[in-house]
Every structure is written in structure tokens, then in C-alpha cells.
Amino acid sequence: MILTRTPFRIPLGGGGTDLPAFYQQHGGFLFSVAIDKYMYIAINRPIIDSLVRIKYSRTEIVENVAQVQHQLARAALEYYGIKDSIEVISMADINEGTGMGSSGSYLVGLLKGLQTLTRKGYSIQELAEEACHIEIDLLHKPVGKQDQYLAAYGGFTAMDIDRNGAVQVSNINLGHEKTEELQNKLLIFYTGISRDALSILGEQSAKAKEEQSDVAKSLLRIKEIGREIKKSIEEGNLDNFGRLMDEHWQVKKRMSTKISDPKIDRLYALAKDNGALGGKIMGAGGGGFFLFYCPGDKKGIREAMKANGLREMPFRFEMEGAKTTIDF
Image (cartoon, rainbow, N blue to C red; front, side, top):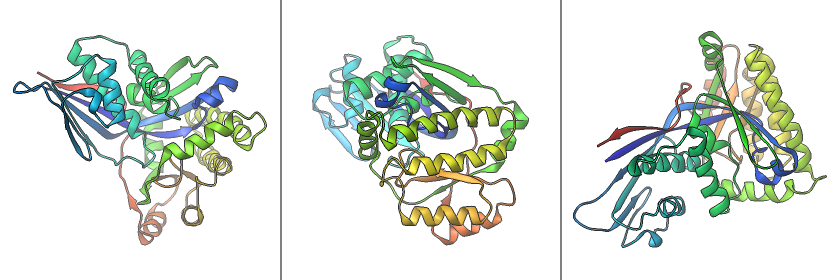
């Protein structure tokens, strides 16, 4: 049996510029960090039959991989030439549809396991690109490259994407003191709302191709903000990061009516009234998790969010990417 562990991520700046529709015209830039919430993938070769078993929120038992309904699992298994006699079980600390990069973590974790199973050695970048190729090129999902790369690399990761889609990765070492300071000033709350990220991203991708569209203009500014956020965090100017995150959210909301709604806007305003300098809904938007930067006392924001039904998710930064933890 093989077991892999792959982290989820927090997008810090530049989100959305990793969509092909944008970076093919302007290039992209993202800065994100992995956290200690994980996707676990177990892979086993059954010895009593040749069936295919895929277990996630439901269980599929079929005769061959071509019959599998789970798109990511089917595509990954077919990519590795596996036709039958396989069992894949997934478990996660965070539900899908919450803006934490679950599909990217699932696919990277599964590919990491299949690499171990087939004894094929790949670099971290090759693992990330393999996941991008399957999800973007083969399955034609309207997604970017951030989730796959963060799942593969972990840590604080900056991505420069050129117009051809080539990604230059920089792992950022902030040092213990800066890392702990940032850690202690970030809060995550779950809204209880899940959403279909693909519909939001599909709309953004279509509009990003239009040079003068609000989406394209917004993403150009978001790309600039992403670089400014990285610089602020590296220099230890965290309050400026908080203010930039607020601007990031205001710009992002202009890209689609599905990114926010009156309830989300009210909760965001409430958080700012209780000490947050900035924040955002993570991922495509529309629900999932809030990320807030709160430099002072956090009692007020915690009480305000709890009173409105939001649940805090404690977390730590994770410096490792996808890894095989069991192989026998």
C-alpha cells in the first residue's frame, strides 16, 4: 500500500493571474503558502480480483478504469496506463468547494502515489506540470496552475508564469521570526458555504481574453498587487500586506457578480470593524473560507464571526509539499 500526504494552500497575492486566458497574454504572478491541512491518498493493488475501486465522498466499484466517473482519478490512472486492479481511497481535512485548492491537492497526491507505485522518479516541477497537463490540457478544466504547484512544493512559493505557460518557482525563506509574526496575525474562518468554483473560473477565463474587459484590467492590477504583497512580507511590512490584501479583495470583486454577495460583504465589513486590516474569500470566491489579516487583539473578530455562525480553523504553515508517507 502507498499513502501520500499533500497540503492545501492559502493564496496571498496574484490569484487568478495563473489562468491560461490571462497569462497567455500578460504573464502571471502568484505568491502563496501551504498550510497543515492535507489531502491523503491511499493506493493499493488488490490480489483477489481485478476490479477498480475509487473511494471518495462516494464509492465506485467498476471493471476497468474507463468506467470510473471521478474525472481526476480516471484521467490520472489512464495517464499512467493503469486499466484495472487498483484501489484509490481519498480523505481530506477540508471539503471540496471551499477555495483551498482541493482538486489540485487531490491530483498531485494521486500522481505522487502513482509515481511511487510505478517507481518513476520525477522532480517536484515535473510533478506539478504533470498535474497541470492533466487538469488543464486533457480535461479542459478552466483552472490555473497555482493549486498544483503549491501542493507539489509547499512552503512560501512565488510563481512567475510566462506567456508560454512555463513556470519559474521561487521558494521564499522568511526566517523563523517573520514566519511566526505573519502566522500569528492571520485568521481563517469557514463561512459554511460551498460553491462551484469551475463556473466562476469559467466566466473569468472567457472575459480575461478580452483585452479591455473589467476582468483583464482587474487581473493586471492583481498581478501588481501580488508582487507588492511578496515584497511587503519579505521586508516584514505586514500591515502594508494587510492593506494590500484589502485592495486585492476590492479589485477581485469587480471580476464577477458570483465572487461576493450581500452576506459576504456584511461579514467582511464586520471583520474590518473588529480589527482586520484586510482579508478575502479564498479561491474563486462565492463562499468557502475567509482569510483575514488582524494585527491587534483578535478577541473582537473571533466573537463577531462566531456570533454569525462562522467557525475558525486553526492552522500552521507547512513547509513541505506532497510526500509519500507509507510505501510497502
